[in-house]
Image (cartoon, rainbow, N blue to C red; front, side, top):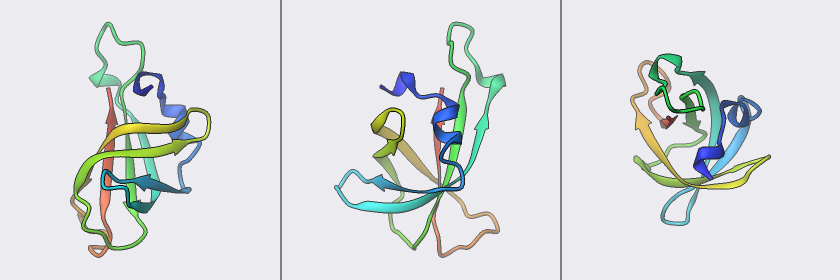
Length: 103
């Protein structure tokens, strides 16, 4: 199913609150803060333009990274999505910031 995900699936959710289901079964409320296409990262034989999704937690969390699931309105539950924590870089250090990359 991951190969069917496009930038538009996440653009529809940008600015909205969603829930990540973490690998241990717990849930983390997040906001989708940005969706960015990465045209220079495209492989010549890949039809999908690579993109990244930036998320931020709505409360403090110890979750660092791992496989998660997220609900996408047009596709249903997207499972086995690797979510990576990124540094706050001047943002609220009490929250967590994440990135999902799609190649």
